[in-house]
Image (cartoon, rainbow, N blue to C red; front, side):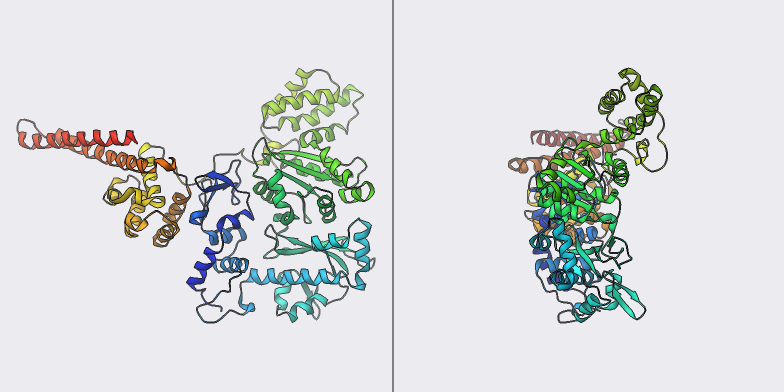
Length: 627
C-alpha cells in the first residue's frame, strides 16, 4: 500500500492548483462580480448558471444542487475519483512529486488506478503515433493522404498506426512497467489463448481525449481486407472511458466553442479533422454511439448555454442513416437553450469527402447554410407524402402536426404552424394552427422523446433542487450575518461574538454560529481569507456544516465594497432587534399573567423592562434602517 499522502503535500497541491483554471477545463466561467466566477453546473442540468467559483478562497459551490468544496473535491466529483486519486491527478498536473507517510517516493505501480490507466494510454498514444512513419503503415498514410490530410495534420490530431502483430503494443507497455491486468482493464489489450494480445492491430488509430487533454481511449479504422472486424473499432467501456460521455475533439474545440458559443457535431474522426482544418474549430464527434444526454451536458458547460444565444449545428450524411441520426438529434433539441440547426449536403457528402472534392470553403458553406432543426424535422416528415393531392396534404399535416405541437415556445410554435401551412400548400393558416393546437393540448405520449412525442422528455426546466431557502426575513438576516462571519469577520467584531447562539432561529444557523466561536471567533477570522475558510471547514463536525461554510464563502455579499462596514453594522443591529422582539414578547406574556393591583410591584418592574426594551428596539431599527 502507498500509505497516506502527507498533509503538507496535499496543501501544496491545493496551493498550486488554481481552482478557476481547473474548473475552466470542464466549464466555461464568466465574471459574476465581487471576484466570483459563474457557469453552468457540471453536476446537474440547469438553464441558467448557478455554479459559482471564488478563486480567492479556492472554493466552488452550486446554488442549484447544493454541492461544493475545494479544487480537490471538484476533481473527485468531475472525474469520479477517490480523494487520494484526485490529489494524485492534480499533483501530476502541477508537477508535484507526492510523498507518503510510510516513507519515500511511491513507485509508479502503487499509484491510483486511474492515474495508471491514463499513463498507459498516454504511452500507447505515443507508441501508435511513432509507428505511423514505419514502412508497414504505408496503407494508413495513403488513407490519410487520399482524404486530404498531411503529415502535420496527423501529428496535430495524434493519429497513429497499430502494427499488425499480436502483441506489439502489449510487449511495449509491459516493458514500461504496466501489468497485463491493467492493459486488459483499460481496453488496450484483450485476453488471448496464451495471454493478453493487442486490441487494435493493422489499423489507423485516433487517440480519444477528455476535455483536459488526457488520452482515455482510441478509435481504430480498418485498413486490411483480411481484417474481418468492423470498419471502426473503439475502446470498450473502462474505468476511464465511457463512450456516452465522450466527444472526440473536445480537447481541441472547447476554447473555440466557449468563445463562439457554437458547436458543430459531426459523425466521424476524419470529419472533425476536416472541419478544424477548413476553419471550423468547434467541431466534435461522438465515439461509436448516438448523440445523447451526456454529450449535451458537455456542450452546454462549454457553451455557457443560455436562451437566445449560441448555436449547435448537426451535420449528417444525406443517406437514410444520416436522416435517422438527425431524427435522434431532434429528440434532444429542446434540452438546449441555444438554437439548434442541421447542415446536410444535398449530394450526401460528409465534411471530409466534401473538403477533398470541393475544398475548405465548401465545408464552411455547408455549415453556413444550416437549417433550423425544427424546420428540418418537419420538412423531413412531409417529404414522405404526395402533396399534389388533398389526401396526401392532410396525411402530411397529421404526421407533422405533433412535431409542431411539441414546441414549448408558443410563439415559435405558431410561426412553425404558419410555415407548415405554406409548405403543405393548404393555404388555410387558421385551419393548420387549430389542428396543431388541438394536438398540443393532448397529454404527452409515454416513451422516449421522438418527433411527435416531445412531451416525453421529462419536466421543463424546473426550479433547481438544493438547500432550503428560508422565506422569512429573519432567516435571511441570519444568513447574511453568517456570510459576513465567513467572508468579512473583522467587520462584525465582538458584537457578533457576544450575540449567543440563541439569537438564531434555525438549528443549523445556531450550529454555524457555534462553529465560528469554536474556531476562534471573529478575531481569529481577520479579513476572512482562505486560511480562515479552511479553518472553518476543518472544524465543522459534519457534512451539513462543511457544505454551509462553502456556500457562504462563495455566495456574493448583498452590498457594494465601499459600504460593507455600514452593511455589517446594520445587519448586527437588525439581528439584535429581532432578539429584542422576542424578549419583548416574553415580557408582555409575563405581564399578562400578573394582576396589576395585587402584584403591582412585579408588574411595574416588568413594565419598566418593557419600556427599556422598546427603546432599545427603536434604536436598533434606526441603525439597521440607516445602513
